[in-house]
Length: 73
Figure 1 (cartoon, one colour):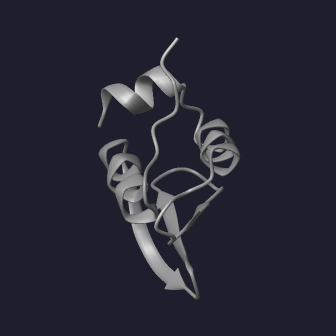
Figure 2 (cartoon, helix red, strand yellow):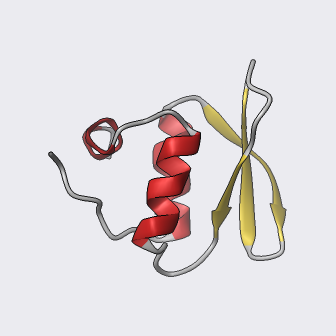
């Protein structure tokens, strides 16, 4: 099993964009991503380093595994 990488918010957004997400807006210190055909949005903190628990929750919300995420980097 792949381990979670240490990424900034901007780096995480780039990987989520490779799965079809698009930045809809910047709201304070968070970047809001939407995906065509999906109701839910992802709110990625625009920090120098996204906490591992936060990244794991974002992956779960996006229906991605750690392996899929790491492979897309």
